[in-house]
Length: 73
Image (cartoon, rainbow, N blue to C red):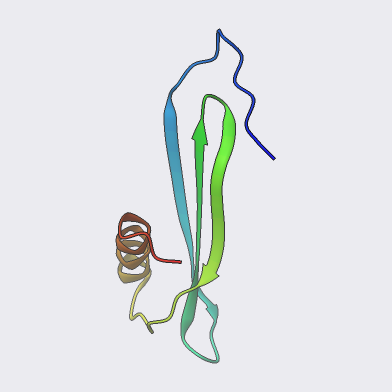
């Protein structure tokens, strides 16, 4: 498997992140999702349940961004 990049493709890197606050209310866990696009092609994506119980949607968002920044898998 490989990536195909036409000669005229843009090399813009875009990243998106989202959190579903308390998507598992029985365990107090939120769902983190992220997507990275380079030149219009998805190069990385993930959806994972957070391992830490959060107390607010803002806390969940900050935790998600930190995990993505640190390369959490």
